[in-house]
Image 1 (cartoon, rainbow, N blue to C red):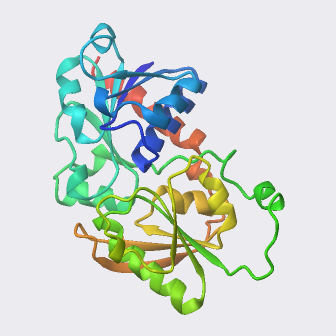
Image 2: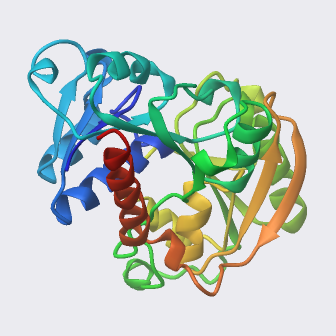
Length: 301
């Protein structure tokens, strides 16, 4: 099948962009024809370079060459530019992934969308309760992880000089913004009280220096995030995000902070890696999504 995968931005190392990249790469491997599309101004950077190096096609959503293509399925991620693509390709089947329950990820409500994919159960609950989407139109399919990168192979650490005085380290990966601010603060407090190192990795969006815990060591976003994960003892993050699952795959437990739309922490949970990680493998996740593509295409015939 030829699949158009849309996203608002495809240039940085964020969760939604990694979701699209990993999905498209696995779809191509199993014989489909994925095409990634995003607004021209937001299409570039490391994500585009990585996608092209993997043999993937990525085009701007404005005008040619997208207008000269036909697709069996639209896989919509994020509201813009997805809404316009439904009109641009009226005969294509459609599914939509919703990446969070917050207003910034408000779903497109359209009878054209055969299935909504929620990456967590709490998103499915919100889609049904607040958006009025029938339960049978929402499937929970988690983020897919590349286990060839994220696993319990510690070759990276074996190559590093060992510091006998090193403290246990907690890793928080994610964009530094208002949704994560309180969780970052609480993680910093935990590290201070327990004499742990606190490592922050990500882009700073509107997080003032005075709001960053003084004990945090800040690192820029990096593709080889598995190096940070292998070096840590615990992960920390908001909701059940990609980094928590990547940490589990590497054998690392994680703190999961539940936050509301304003970033207020409403709960925190300590999690050990599940014994069975099969549901998170990119192969399994992509197989489930590809099956939905087939059902969606049959439904519009």
